[in-house]
Length: 57
Figure 1: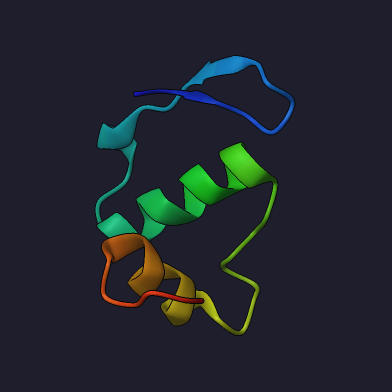
Figure 2: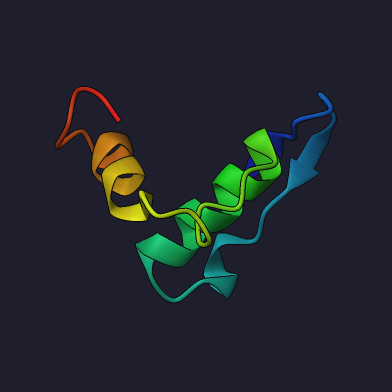
């Protein structure tokens, strides 16, 4: 999967490296927004927002 990182450069993310969706989303947020959501207290809220279960974070 190719993504733009927070600096605007295109980077490759090997999605087969991650065994579950949670780790993949953590890596995507780290690449795209330079935010480590694994250390935030609202990890589940952010993941629910990304999955479409919530409207607002």
